[in-house]
Image (tube, rainbow, N blue to C red):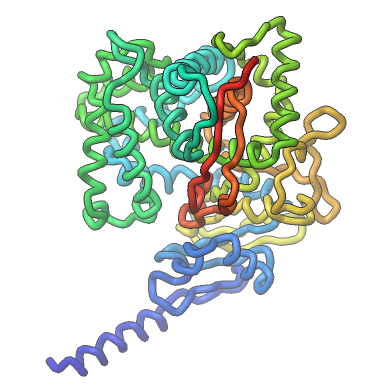
Length: 495
């Protein structure tokens, strides 16, 4: 067969594929398919999701359907419609997507099939150990482990200014302290050996995470499969059995896995590795952005630092830099300006996408006057970054204002769109019943890190460098990474 004929057949196949593509039905939102079969608008969305959605919102309105990598995704861009979508439980399901993608990404078998009866429900119930009263011992453990890492790595030597890379600094401390808190420590020492190697493997895997979530086969991603195997092997049961001070959360999950003979040791380890990513993958970059915005706004840093010192004084703590400090969960909850600063940094850096899968063809109620027809298998998507950067909701939305969530000395919870009060105005952790179950622990971790940082160090950005910008390549997956690391100076404070 001649090359020309092959080319013509290929073009004919392409044309037929386009012609047989989905057609918009009556009552359905505007349909944007793109001209590339299967791919659709994936490349444009991946380049800058926020810009892409804003442009299409102006052209097509608040609700539209886009073909992205073979999926039809209906975006709801008006936050006043969010409550109707979030409460729609029976016909819209979040877990269908996560239950399909997570096992492939982290290398464990799906737990919703008949081989593991009841396991999925019990695993979900285990997340209760990250909330309520169970959060107190976890918070105390994290405080001690952060203090341990800070004291041994950064508080031993006095002297002048030191220069560091801010993201690397945040990531290394948060990674190890979180690992120690969740999984425990060796029986004979306070810290694990080989943590740098584990962290390096984690970062390499994390770099490929967006491609894995997009369901690119891992065999096409170079050494990613081998790196994942090394990460998984770190959590084999015979190794974890030699660790002490393991959190009740991880202990409970280990006990559950042991009840199922069909789960291999490597499968159990893969589940534990997945939980490590869930604990660090978004919390570490969120910590970076919270630190970056405070250090780059000295007036905000000063207010938050003073709030912290006032709290210690009222608590009867005579702080000095040569003493370890412990902050309880109740004390952390009183640091309102600190929490406002963290929430503001999350508003500016988070790019999560809340997704649900339509379980049948039905008419989705958008508000009191409007509905939209959706098809079984379609993805309904909320993209809160549009709301977070809406100038009608947040004045001067590109600017960091540490007290944006404060009003008259108390927490501000009233934000408006089109003159109507928003039920949802800040959504870095998802929504409804699918909100991140570890969000309270994550916020406490970030608060603890920042408290120790402000108590023990003077902090400055190095002069003559460009400001940190967001890397859009992880749009939809949580907190965005910085495009570039930031150089900063730090020295021990004389207190």
